[in-house]
Length: 394
Image (cartoon, rainbow, N blue to C red):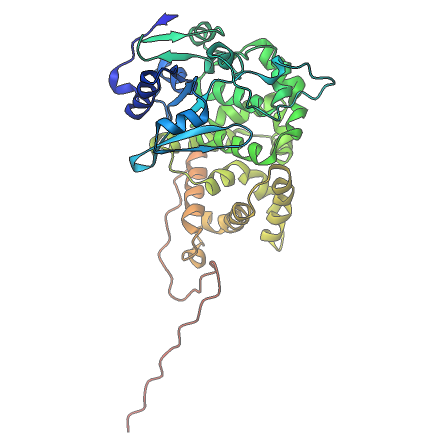
């Protein structure tokens, strides 16, 4: 146990109320996971999660403003005003502790084996995420060595990293996310295991891969995240199109500079970049290369994105938007984007052009004045305005 007192204003009031009611009812209740980690490293937690000895039905009975969700992983959402949710999960233990799995398939397919507090800590992915905070005693409960790795600023799995990555390959992407976002290093064991197991990413659920890539882009550390993906060989599995471009181009500095600008924009604007813009920024350079010197840029972009849609379950609506943005981007950067001004995607394309310009050390493209003589090529056909005929005077 490590005595730690966080400022009262740093603790989410709703989460504290959930813990208080659970403990008054005779259950254990702690703040857990990412919120404890972020508080310890001086960051403001995005969410506060609670772990408890109460079963989901017991939590639901205590809070009328709650609902049970999930099938593979049943937990309770306690609802508060303004859409605020406190996720409350029952202590669990790793299913592999109850039965020996034969063969090499360690992929976790069920996660509803209830356990005790130390078992719940032990089934989490990384030591820095296995810390519990006792609000009453104002102390960190550490069964996994997380405090040591917080002080050492190191990402380390709980248990053998090869086994943990085989259980859930997405943990490799989470290791990169935490290393990049927290500016931590990876232990040698974790780094080597991720390189060894990177091919396992192809076995992960495709929607999870797509969402995890977006999380890497959203966190304000996309430049370091994508660099680690490339350095560790995971980009070859996830986005070989981008990996090949980086390997083949003579100067890749513009790619990293653009991602740095994305990070700056997210930090300055509190995460205001849309998913469409993030995907466009990630893929724009190889996409522009694929569209270069073609008579039909949109068709070339569509052909480029089709394997990405299949491999990562990229939503087609996002892919189509990226396709259209990249197709009109050269005209905007050349100052000839008037015809696209009324398109719903024009502001995103203009923002991407501005990010690319700043990344190259150039002045951002200014929004051109509307030209009434042009007919926009936006989301659909538009009617030409009829010119009124002047009546002849009698």
